[in-house]
Length: 289
Length: 87
Image (cartoon, rainbow over the protein chains, first blue to last red):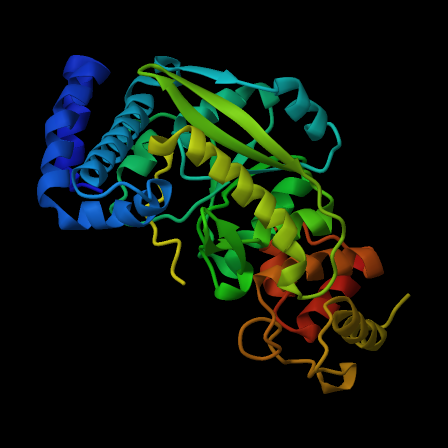
């Protein structure tokens, strides 16, 4: 969201006035977008209509403003991490010991997150595991902010696995898990073919969510951790372990066998949205049916 | 030690059984047929299973994409990879 020069403007604001100045400009920029950009409102609408089914007219407009404003703050925070380093935010990780004990099983760790809070900031909290962290994410042209670590000359704290590469990056994921590493994936958006997704219930409707990570976990015996980040205050985030999912060996090509496990993720995400309605930033049309 | 022919025969058999390729028999799989995409029609999820199957049945580990990409092209390339690793 936003053009290149707009990103550059906010980078400058952060450099010269810090996070607060960038936040200040956001009120106007987001106000403009919500008032005049039909596309911005349209992208937020499917989620808001389900999260606030009784909100119409001005109320819906208000929810759009709050959601997009929070999204803007997260984009600013993302850039702040790139420019000033992860120490710019206080990040609290809950259930640290539990994560370590799962890693000690020696089968790597699959962390399934979602487009909530700010995962880039939350990544800073994973240092303590002292294992390489891999992130399955698509490299897109023009997505300058996502690669800000590289632009700022700061070492990227995670290795990127590109799902558009050979066999959807599954071989790299397997290789990383075999080495006992951590692999993070986003569980709320499909990246590949329809065969790698299953239908589950989410906020009163049916959505397609990917199950590749669950398949890998089933094959390798790797534990899955569902984790969500949340913005707690202007300069702090927390990372919560919402669910640990263990999947038995499931043979064959039958995707339906994975539905109960993907549903666990979906239910945890729905609970998150109930608690923090303005921190869910999946502007992808999830409810297509 | 398994010969290349033994490996190919066993590979086809475990492929059909472990990946539940219900519409296919081992005899119907050509040695040069592409495993993924057009050809046998396997996809990235089957690749996960295939890597594990190769380790389980042949004791050979496909460590990363550098090894996996050339090996997972067809039955011929996979059998040659396994044979080489078993030496």
